[in-house]
Length: 429
Ligand SMILES: [Zn+2]
Image 1 (cartoon, protein in one colour):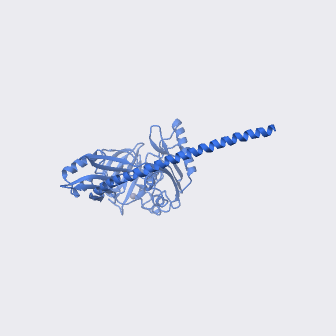
Image 2 (cartoon, protein in one colour):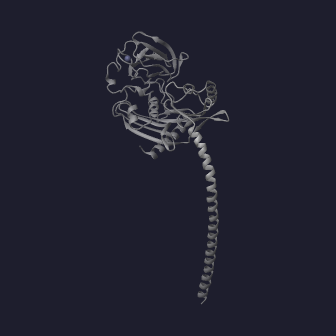
Image 3 (cartoon, protein in one colour):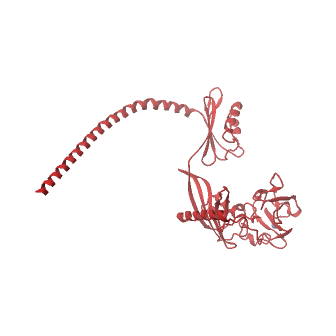
């Protein structure tokens, strides 16, 4: 009985609670319904009125804009904004003002070939610019607009995102072409070649079926994945039959410098470069390295890099240009004096690069490939001299560059491990 009463009480309590709950919910929904009803009506009503006026207004404005004449011009080599405006028939006085305003944001001579410039203008008594739109590098656009008879220029940039790219492959002809075929960004391969140019002779040390790997960041604009920008190269490796396995890791020091080091913290940079030329433009190395005139022999005393006329030639190391000019069978010739009694010489150039003084920095362009002097085709003849004697660059043991120590080595190892972890997480595409 006590038990029954207890249950009865509990049930009563529960039923009361449920009915209160249901009642409040019903009231709540009724209220909401009423409210939303009201709101809907309001929106509908106001929307109709609002639409009518605003829509027509906008349409009228749009019509004016649409009838405003537009010039679209694809930038050709040698074009400047000034040239384009003159050719489009705008008045000189206006062009001067436009160029002056443009210069506040960017150099109107630096247009990108192939991009399309849009000029909107009006033609009342004279032809006058309303706005100019110029696509710039990657995610940036230039926009100039006439507001209250004054020109206002601005540069806008679209938000970008970063993705990691890891690619591996065999070399079937050159690193450059094999990299492109593997889908590596062309700027990334160029950079990879240049960081390996200190220790690798890209004409003789790369053989068929050697391996490469590269890991880098790529910046892109959301929904516009075709527009890409090369970010950081984090890791690059070459597995060569001639030189073995070479791995290089990016290292950002606390001072903000960026350099590449091998697994043990030795700098990729050496006193002299083994490939003092744009390695991406070398003719395929295979077979070439067996060619007597292109290899090294006692009579030849140098190495040859076969590349198209005009390919840039770099100073192999820091130094002072001690000879520059015509030198008999060598044709147009440059010789640079470096530290440690080293000298390097470059022959058969098509032309010299204009340089401010006798001192050059490693990697600076000193001239261009040609076939001047006693030469059968465009190539660079490269000599290394030690204590005045020509030596075989292929056999040269160069003093190694900087080696990381202490705290720097510690932070390099940390960065290297982060790179390895990122690579593990990503796998290979
Ligand atoms: Zn030669």
